Length: 157
Image 1: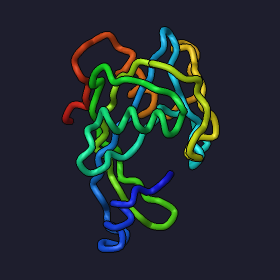
Image 2: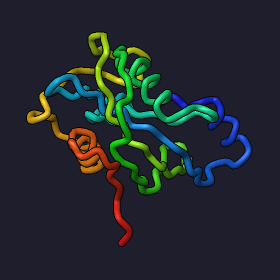
Image 3: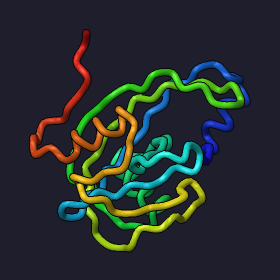
Image 4: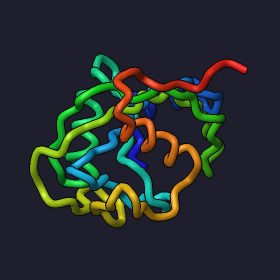
């Protein structure tokens, strides 16, 4: 995962202390297909995701990340859900937690292919034949594929 310059600057000041970051997940849909990437850092299939840059709108982030990671042009249609990750501890000791906005996107053009080194593969999967996914990825994709126009969220306990 490429570290945005603003986080490199923050880490120089706060070290490995936990950061609260915002992210966007782009679930790109083309008919009955969903665009997924196989992440270079984990080797797992997932929707395209990225950290929202300072001053960037979540939709801009999602569309940028889809182009950067999968070589596809997409447009955000709606917010599908919002969730919070557990704390992530990286190999170098950096800690972060993410408030993530899940966005349903429609495919505009392009054939998926890895672009920036963050993805090993990028391809379409039929919505009923998705590869093995983590629980959070599966939930986010289900939110985006739902026809309910309301954004989903994880209710309080």
